[in-house]
Amino acid sequence: MFSNLKPLPTDPILGLMAAYQQDTNPNKIDLGVGVYKNEQGDTPILESVKKAEAFRLENETSKSYIGLAGDLGYCRKMESLLLGEHSALLADRVRTAQTPGGTGALRVAAEFIARCNPQATVWVTTPTWANHISLFEAAGLQVKEYPYYDYENKGLLFDEMITALKQVPKGDIVLLHACCHNPSGMDLNQEQWKVVAELAKDVGFTPLVDIAYQGFGASLNEDAAGLRVLADTVEEMIICSSCSKNFGLYRERIGACSIIAKDTAVANVSNSVLLSVVRGIYSMPPAHGATIVDTILGSEELTGLWHQELAQMRDRINGLRSLIVDNLHAQDVAQDFSFIKHQHGMFSFLSITKEQIERLQKEYAIYIVGSSRVNVAGVSKANIEYFAKAVADVIK
Ligand code: PLP
Ligand code: TYF
Image (cartoon, rainbow, N blue to C red; front, side, top):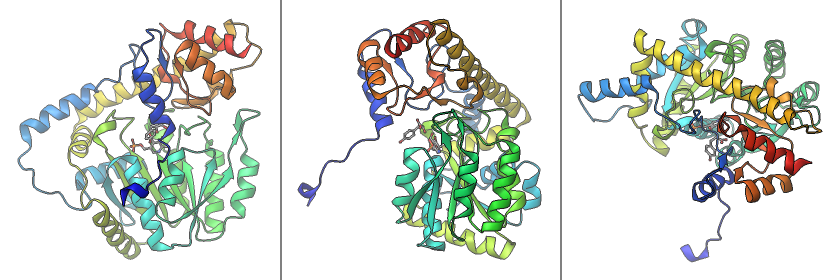
């Protein structure tokens, strides 16, 4: 039976990560996979996480199963983190399941949508994180795209986006990136979120907000502001969140899928379906990451420390955005790269060709995803000049 299988391509981003690890060039730079790195190029465990882990080791009393929804303390704290002061107002309408990472949240959401309406189409931004498409298709849903990033002007195609969303059939799903859009770094502003929220209400589509980088853009609250406008406006929505980046808990696989329904009765029924989906895939999520986040958010001292560490990561990313632009411009390149300063999170498109990306990898051991998406956290003060000279060389 297995001999009938045909080989499938690997995830290009994870493939690039493996190729980088094998490269022996001492000057190599990894701008591929979306993982935060410090000035030394490391992805260290946060101090707040270390402290919470020590606490867990001392205080954990059982390894018995947790329920289908996972750690309920974690779920409630995630609702507060996502919805802020709105979480108390929405408490009767929101139900959350802890999931294995943001990817697990999206996969659970996909199955949940298929239970609601197997004919629903999920509309995603052009471009979007490639996994979005495969995660929804895996649940048998159709995926279509709506205009989003303006490759030419390095901004948003907002008018085109609105025109397309007006045509979305009632009952379809529209996926929105809450902040730090992956791969473009271009986010909606507050006014634009309001327009989208009103449109969702008028047209009757259900927003699904993917929030994988809360705190990496402007602040925890500002990065969730659009999501909160939606939650205030629409009757129902889905939120898929991740603690991989903002808590640096990548391999612990910790995220959440939250459903906001129009009233308590529908929320309870939705929750029963959500938990049935979970039971059919992995039964229960792993405990470790949730306990860490629950411990941090349940302690004023650890929350304060985490806020500091998150601000440090964010400030470094934003500082690097300016450093990249200044260094590229110092090489007298013809292109204007200043747009990189105005985008958010870890990603921007460098807007260079496939051939130029290949040359960067072959001749300079600089690893960039084929779309020209760079993880800005991969550069440092030590390698920025090497990077800028290499880019200037291949684009001249
Ligand atoms: N959504 C987006 C837009 C992402 O970029 C990622 C990956 O980092 C995820 C969701 C899921 O992340 P994870 O499954 O590691 O929590
Ligand atoms: O886009 C990225 O680089 C991150 C990390 O299959 C990632 O979202 C990439 C690919 C993948 C899982 C996570």
